Length: 423
Image 1 (cartoon, rainbow, N blue to C red):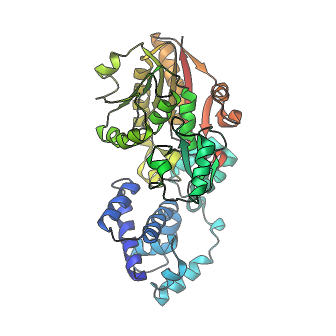
Image 2: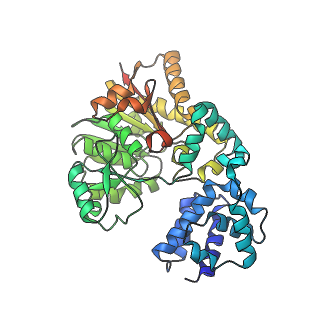
């Protein structure tokens, strides 16, 4: 493709994404479907330039003010992630001179807002939470995330998977903490490898794997993944159960549950039962009250723990949306807790960085139980549970009794989990 044409396409894609009318990954995918003739290198340039602009939107918008021409084109030039020589061939002399001037600006001397590239409300919340650790977090959020895989222990062993990937020219290393995990730098094409198509591995962040390990589903148990989504944690739980017992995958979205079907077929699991529910008080949930051994509530949340992968989320969330989400999270957790039999384990988890969706919800749940006296639950220490699940260096993954993962500390997405046992 001619350099001018690729730059024009990048400008068009940015124009669509920066309307924030839909998740960026969805907009990018739809754009690629419209332009099926794009090669792998061209798609990489388009996608990575878009995400670079989303990560540093405030900085790039500030710098772009000194340029001329369409704003999205200037942003594309500042965030360009393709071949630099290819880009130069698309620029006029004025643009080349402008980029050269911009390159001399020392970003370290700019206001904090242009360095952290977060909306004010989110920057304030995270700075209050992290103190001196705030800027290391920002540095990590401006980097892409590695590719983590989970070995499906029903079909493969981790050492076998490493060897199989090596034979395909892919260097995979064990994840630091999850005994199921592998980490790969870059984004190799896995979809055509037999190890993937036959269900030997699944793409899953190490932090997400740790939530399944914390749930610790056993052979022959009755288990519920309360907000199953596309089923990543469901499949990990089913494998941990060694394809025995009964595992319900609840979700209000039939579309998300449908997305689980091909993954479920690859996994070889027959103990998973996807169920679409209307809401957290659905009659099908009530019929299981007091019968379940383990419940994982991976609650709907802001998703701000995934900013390395989904940088548009920081521009699409708001304090009002977080407050509304918190009410829903507590309602879901209270409803899910009624499923547990005595001795059963309840795990509340999010992929959020915010205490308002994490520790605050755990505290509100305990307060509501004390207030209503409908059931008794005892909080469990996440570190001890992770150690029993053979998670390495479990003590590094917790704050107090809770699992608390941060991209800059643990090289995972941001995750939280609180655990209780029904008395």
